[in-house]
Image (cartoon, rainbow over all chains, first blue to last red; front, side):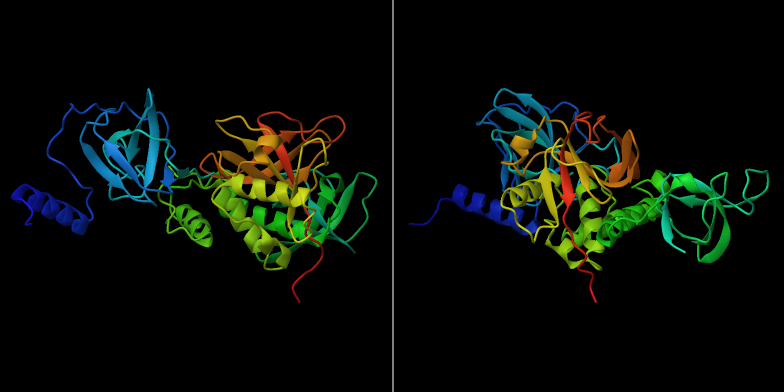
Length: 118
Length: 266
């Protein structure tokens, strides 16, 4: 059976995003994005295992990033079982970013497995 | 005569055995090695020969600010801590500034992380301690058995476990603060953010903490050097109890006792 066009398009989108090294982005956002408040910590932690980052503290919200082990995140704010995080994009951490160090952000629904230095 | 070490943060070297305007030759730093050329006179002045930035000087210092050497292996680690403190201009060299970020980068790379030191949101204090211990291992190979890590909690856990197992290959054994009096070249540890005890540190290797290498022991307190202190390599003072142990204050909870014997590399 041949895959339908939307499935092929989805696979292509995923393949392109993987090949470009960018996080996989999905078009449909079932719930509105919830901004993560300014980060209370200035310490970045290194992921030991991958993470899915959502646009809101809601499992039905869009996935905004798929972070691999070795990427750095900041634990910003709790919302129930969810944790709002910053994550560095093309940099190691957010300390060298312009615009007040702000990094991309999102929500995770698990306690991240990280190496917290120092 | 004999070699001794400066036992204060800064000590004046003078051309004559008196405090007088204009007779200061140089300022000696903490743990700087001097060769004594005389016993102390009635006022406590000792004639010394000392190397200052590559030039030999002779002069006088107040003898009460000198100490006897301790075991060579301990002096080796103290010397590495002092070396980093001096590289960071005694706490004034800031981590994000050239050349200091490069020194932080060296510390990261020594533990296998490809960081260049420019990213100041990643605490580097454990990388600094690992770097000091690793470099001390050039003279005393037992230091190479250290659990090098970017997390203090990793090597604290390792040192406690090896103490419990009486592992004589370990460079450090972890003890509760009341179990061992601190000595030069020991490492004192404290928790950050989430409270820890010796008991929790014995079963967990993953929490935020900080450790420093002890470089001076006074009657009431001690001083220790660590990384990422005020964004530099700096000195921290820890209080002692009247019986000579590190006081359980300011989050301090463990002492890693230096167990490196005199097995200098030939």
